[in-house]
Length: 265
Image 1 (cartoon, rainbow, N blue to C red):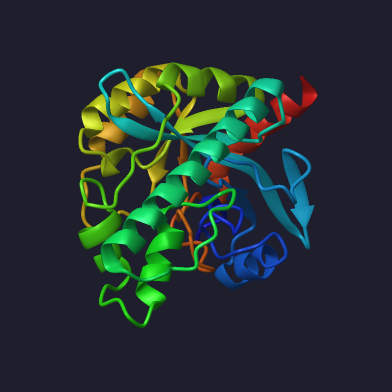
Image 2: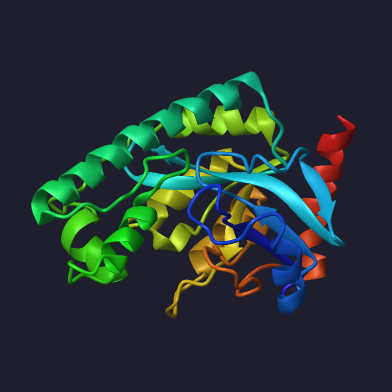
């Protein structure tokens, strides 16, 4: 049974949950703790690093995409986030970039297909929003997966890249603002070994994650041992299903301890 699901998205980025619906979703899954980790922004309805919503502990977090020196793009998870000038500035820059990029992708899709998607380029916009609009359009043949495969995926004709902070910049900003900073889903990257090498400069790594296929977790376990990392885990939920992956109550204890230390400092 999952006690803590520490990777959840809301409508502040590309998820389906809201702060109001998180408690019911958590109770339905038997989850006691939820970390809201929206892409490149803090959920605006959460006003503290840790709060309680209808009996469910909710951690304010963030998932920040950065670019390593190798050129590989990876995601950092920050837990127990506080607003700081540096984080606020980076979030504002990233949201401007997301809006500009969203407009560019929508324009490219509309020019290529000759249809109007009716997508508003808003804060938090990502390719999933555009893919859903493509899939829902009656005059387009692509479903959600097809939208990525044929139009807006990496190297596809309507793709536009984002301008990302460096790994060093992202780590520095999150270190100042968060109780814990970890690497998300390390085995999803094209070069997992290179991604895991970055954990020598982090506090944690996502050990439990729904990869959807059999994977060898030993490289992650080895990084945890070698760098004395906290093991985190979560569903990476973009829908309303929580508890697909996460931590037991015992495994959650180091995260709870780190959050308490940050609150006392």
